[in-house]
Length: 120
Image (cartoon, rainbow, N blue to C red; front, side, top):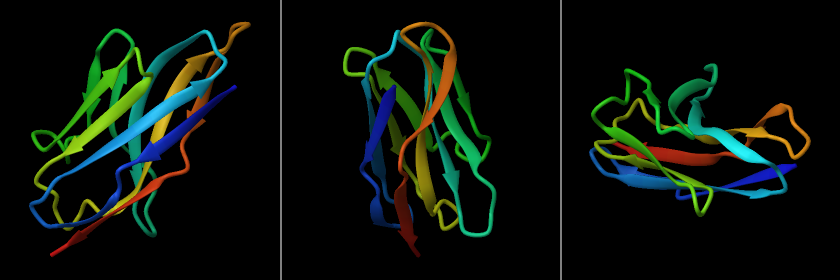
């Protein structure tokens, strides 16, 4: 079992920056990948960025050059540095982790979500 706890959302002016954090805790064998998705009102949840345990990063085209993902493996924490926030970025941002359980098997976990609002 794992839990993901996010922090760092809030209100920012267009062009500003925010940093999201997500810490994983619980009992499991390993974290295979962590990342961020977002969901705006009346839209489907979409990928923002993910990073694997090997350091491979996938970014959405809409955030390339503006957002960067990083991970502190010792702290089991993933970060999303968001710069140059635009009016199309507001959404609930969800932390994601794919985890190998103590007795095997891969499981997907989600955080509770953190709201990001951009004032134009």
